[in-house]
Image (tube, rainbow, N blue to C red):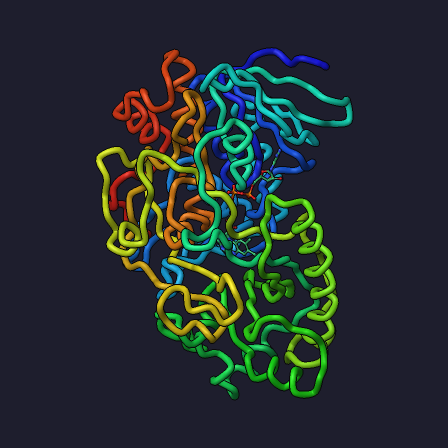
Length: 469
Ligand SMILES: Cc1cc2nc3c(=O)[nH]c(=O)nc-3n(C[C@H](O)[C@H](O)[C@H](O)COP(=O)(O)OP(=O)(O)OC[C@H]3O[C@@H](n4cnc5c(N)ncnc54)[C@H](O)[C@@H]3O)c2cc1C
């Protein structure tokens, strides 16, 4: 077995949170290695959905730091829209997913991050509760990588699970998780025709029953640079009545990017999947890829403006909304999120709404009818603070977690999983790991004031004081 030299920080998973985390660790002075199973970076961020909740619905920024820098760099390269403060999603920012991947890679390289791509973390090497190394499988066989501190940004908390850290799975009452979906992009769309259709069929633009946000007006839709909409219910019903195409949702989700004929489509859905179970995930891939075939036929036949559309890209893997939640010394709750609470050890802010897709079709787990769209979405007017304690798994000395697996309840995780929040937690997880490694202390023993100072020095927004201009 090959052994790779020791790093101060090893970040596992180069997705939404992981790349930002590695940049944060490296800029904090740590010799950092970023390990990823695929050949590119960005993870689910690179599928083309709009970046939602980088600011809250009252117009205060939540995303700063390295994530904020990415957004500014994208904007300069014409790769993103301005932030639009949004009644439903806090804020919407459309971005070019391919450019995002490349820019993230460039930023990481410039920060001095070392890379190991095409390498899957399969096991951990422990000394009591200290993680000494990880075992990866790649084209060279098996390889051991030693580190002083580790950041788990695998989305599924694979490292924490292998290292016997504490975690829960899915929702509290039955350990079931939100459904998975394959997001894909289509080109050749005439959006003017689509908006014209909505002008004459406003009922197809209404927000789903059970969503607490206001409906978008078509005027808003035409003006806003990057839109995220759900609708076209009557067209799906028409297809279903005609026995045409299998569409698993009753709303079509569309993300637009200004001046482009290419949109991101969110319509596939598979329930009952454990994203950490290889058989489940295989089934989910096959099922959601078949659903994409059906969806493209439906779009061409039924949705005005999509008559000549074609598939531009299918995702590198099915999108998992929820799996393991690590257990930290604090578990973020729905109330923390809804009330915009602050914490003395906060490392950043979240402003993505509570967005929980039905765990089972027609589910009423959240105590309200969510029959429309299969989603419960509560807008949060004010961003909330994220405690450092949510990033540090109990029972492990030198591990932090960034991204959708941080310590949160099933409901709060509906907000934490947003891309902007993932970048915020990824950044902080990298900085905490770097300081723990450089100061030879545990991740839970770290001086939180030092972490907060370092994060602020790297542009992170810890207080709700920065308005969108
Ligand atoms: C279908 C869907 C739609 C969504 N829509 C939106 C939206 O419109 N707007 C929004 O803001 N958010 C949206 N989200 C949420 C958001 O995109 C994700 O929750 C977020 O990007 C996840 O970030 P992450 O870093 O935790 O995980 P990921 O981005 O998934 O990154 C995890 C990385 O770790 C790698 N990895 C995993 N396991 C291993 C291993 N064992 N070894 C090595 N590498 C590994 C993966 O390959 C990946 O690169 C959506 C999510 C889904 C699934």
